[in-house]
Length: 321
Image (cartoon, rainbow, N blue to C red; front, top):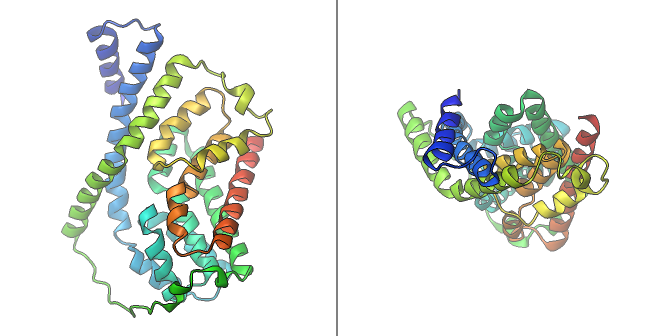
């Protein structure tokens, strides 16, 4: 499908720029041009389709569904984690969503299952992982992310941590049962087109940076170069990857090109997935925003439980893959 892109990249680098195919700079630049075109085409198509599908699951509808299942049962956690995949989410929406769920009477643990799954299991990243690595890796990504969200939310719900939620959250009165109007097909398509453009404008720099780093690694770092540091034989590889990933801020789509190159240079898939999950689920901006509604102790417990879940997932899949 993308043979023409490779042909174009080869012509630009090796013909128009007259670079040698064996040069490190030529290899890096060829990789960068190829991936820039391919990734942005994939992003535009995938975001548009996913946004259209997500238009049937707005946050308000998600809140009503979860509010109808107020019992903090295991099914409620599973439902919250599944809804986290298909509903729109970004770091800036974490606080209003959290407040809205609390207003609607959704248990704290169930709310956390949603808030963990929504950024961690990114549907755009899921489709791109499937295209780059195949069905097995895509399934590992979605299943592991959902399990972390369900188990972490269940544990948090059983710990009785409601007193560590900011006091003002419980003082806000719910807006009541708002009637949701179903948009027309034209409105859904127009919104999907607008959202695709606006999202790409927001994340393009992270995608370019990710591809640029990947291009550098492709040109200057040989295959298996990182295996001795981040391979299966290093027991601290996953831990280091998570520690590095937490303070970073990027969209999952921007991390995937880097994940692809990390695996090429010898980083195990479990370590690479743990790195990506730490960036998306425990990003510093999201933690800063959640601090507005969570007291420090609860925020620390939340980070600790999710971090342990990501570490366990990384080590588990390094073992089985």
